[in-house]
Image 1 (cartoon, rainbow, N blue to C red):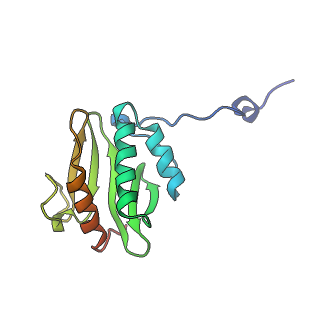
Image 2 (tube, helix red, strand yellow):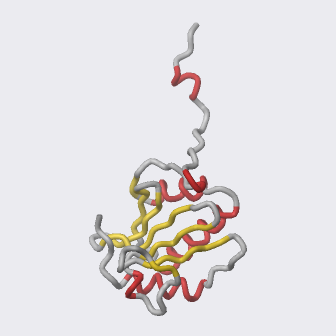
Image 3 (cartoon, one colour):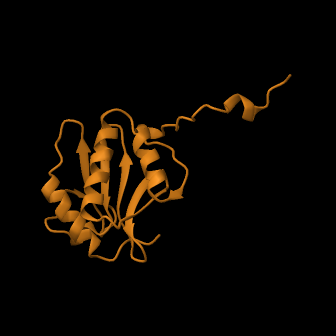
Length: 147
């Protein structure tokens, strides 16, 4: 009997492919599920960083809207757009504040987009949870990015 391709993969979980810099390739989707799949596929130390970032966002904003688009988790408010995104690079996790130029103090890394600012989290750095929580609260109050 010849097994079909679906028979061969039945019962096996597909491991997401890692793109350039170790960024997980996760299908687009709305809700917590795709975001958790992305975080679970983050390589090495980045996985724990992703869990921590996600948990801090949810702690500050329990009603946060989540999705994965363009191989990056996005966080936003229904009807207001996205205020934050994550992306894995080889040596850091990029946290993008889409209206970061309006945050006080400014997140440390500039963008080509005048409105956006970034925070790069490296393996050997601790996240300043108080500052990050402040930025989340400020970003939540601003109009979000609407692609």
